[in-house]
Amino acid sequence: MHTKKNIKILIAIFVIATMMLSACAQPEPETIIKTVVVTEVIEKEGETVVETKIVEVEVTPIPEMEEEKEPITLTIWDFKSGDPVFAPYTSWVIEQFQEMNPHITVELVPQPNNEYYELLGATIAAGEGPDVLLIHGGTRLTERQDLMLPLDDYIGDEADNFINLQNGWVHNETGEVLTLPITIQGFVYYYNKNIYEEAGLDPEKPPTTWEELVANCEVIMDKTDKSCFTAGGKEAHGMQFYGSLYAASIFTHEDHAEFLAGEIPYDDPRMSKQLELWYEASQRDWWQEGVASETTYMDSHDNFSAGRAAHTQGLISDIAHWKMFGDYLGANNVGMFKNVVIDPDIYATVEDIPIAAGGGIGWSALQWTEHPEEAVELVQFLASPEAQLVLFNSAATIIPRNDIDANLISSPFAKQINEWLANAEMPTFYVTPTDLNAEWKRQSSLLLLGEITPEEATQAMVDFYNAR
Image (cartoon, rainbow, N blue to C red):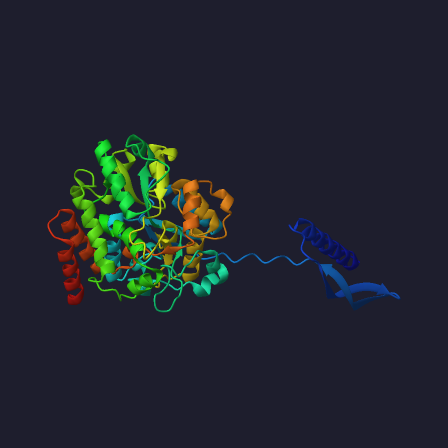
């Protein structure tokens, strides 16, 4: 009969198929033992008999196909990807993230820097907005903190890999982490060593007190045709930034906490002194010609880069900083000092003064995103060590992570700034409410032009504050 022969063929096919499945799997899956009921038709004592028996066989299970994920799109807003030094970072992150997550499309929507927050406000009012947002730390974040998705439940211990997230990146009431930063930003003084030499000053000895700075400026203005400082009067950002340097030298650590809590009135000597110093610099004619009609970014810093001024206030990360100035003037011709002593009863030495640094820029996921897990995953990758090293190599940023090998940072400027960051306070500009910042700018413009006195500016700030 053919029945027995057919059964043998079927068993042979089963064994061969099992062997082929085992051989083809990569990596080789673990085989399991299965009990199988086998039915046989046999000839027994001249009769055809059907018998069943239980046998054990080795089986290699066929792996289940991974379920295909539904395609989604994440939209991100930023104000930096148009900058040539930031573009390599942005394009690299998006390309890598999409390659790792083929079901996710990242749609980048660049926005103009000077209109960014106005456009964001209009979008929010319309009930729309991106999934992920680039934002400044400090007031820019806290004034919009209820729009941000708290990250704590998603990132866990990863928060420990960032430097002082409490300094500008958290909800100011709950303490929840809202943003993962990609830079630390702040203010220092830069000076041109060639101009110091031309004036007969020691290029390796920057001033350490306000009095020494005044004396150096007198020599520079007498011995050279260069201005002592550059600043930006147009848009009135100059005093925001110089004021943050003045405040760092005037405020104790306790004062900074008071200021953050809104407990220092504008007629307090600690506030009025800042206006007096700005006015003094203007009256001493320290600024470049045409200062009132020039912007801080980038007219003022372009003047310094071109060698037309001995000093400027500059940033510590990514723009108008040591890397940019060094590219124009030569790194060996650029000097940097953290601050100057203004009142020795507050800080006796420059070393004691905290660097005016904190905040910077970072990435947040928005509350309304329909894909919170994927949005946070994108935020984490944007702020990952790999991404931040790409950004450092293109934009010379100060990296806000503590899990990156310090040996990868070779610049002496970056090394010095990282040392200074052990004693840092948020720049006052970063933590001042927007409306007060705007009035501070307006009063500083009038001081720059000599149209009012520091006493009048102080009273105007008091009146504005009381009328809020």
